[in-house]
Image (cartoon, rainbow, N blue to C red):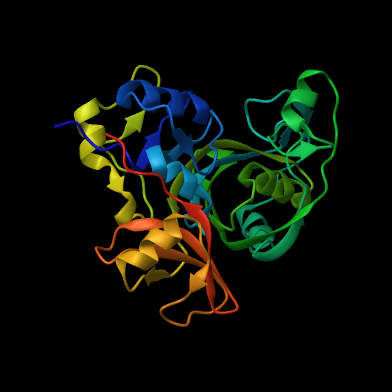
Length: 300
């Protein structure tokens, strides 16, 4: 019996491939056209890349997007176009680097909310154009800053390298960690770039060690099927609402607004039928369930 390719894969991305490369690999292995990811990772970055398959692709925005946990290495005394070690060097600090106590104190000051300017080489759009595409044309544009939240930023010096620090961070969705490292280096007056980055978790989701994708590395089709989290088990953020009858389920699937069987607060809800199958996502408005995402029938 062929697997039902509808659900979530908690990919462990290796350094090298883009997030799109991983999606293409999953398409080839599963034979499914509808595959997408939630939460881009740069080629340099490793770790958790949630990948959705089949009907689950329509639920990407309802997955938890924060907090995100990271760990990696940073280097002080250097700045680059991309804010990481792979980018063209902009400046090199020639003076004495700050001591570990000063670096730790500066990192502590970033905990909380602050306005972050995205990296000049990123997927953020300005006037409808991606910053990384403008950068390839030699055009440097500064995007508008966005408020981000930093719950934790801890730095630990490496004993053998004065300019290299290990770091761990917990941040809100939409935070660029390499921009955070850039801003830390700026606050210290010496500059800083990200050297390595691994995303270890998004909310309660962690990468599966059986789903590692890299250059020439990929699980087989059987392992993918075994590790696929079905839609009914996906940790969707909207609270669950079970409809009271098959007729209510038919009306929801038909896109008809109807009174809710129980009172929920305003907002989105994950709608289930009597057998606890996910029908889609509705929105509670004035006591009515308005269908917003209706899942098509299952595919093999």
